[in-house]
Length: 91
Image (cartoon, rainbow, N blue to C red; front, side, top):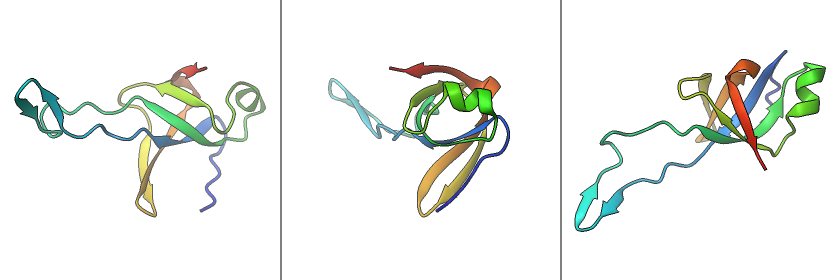
């Protein structure tokens, strides 16, 4: 797979979901009050030079909850987000 985002966009591999959670003897299925992951690993960085200086392939970033456009390639979920949707990098 070779996807190259354009301009100030970043391709992110979405963080894996935790699945079911167990609290005491109560099992909470992953479909109940499911939150979208807001962290992911950078797979590709767009062509904007300033963005390339700040965000590198392999970085883990935190992005806005409802940001970006979802795509699925070879059963892996990716997200393409704009620079404005990136909130922080995790070091």
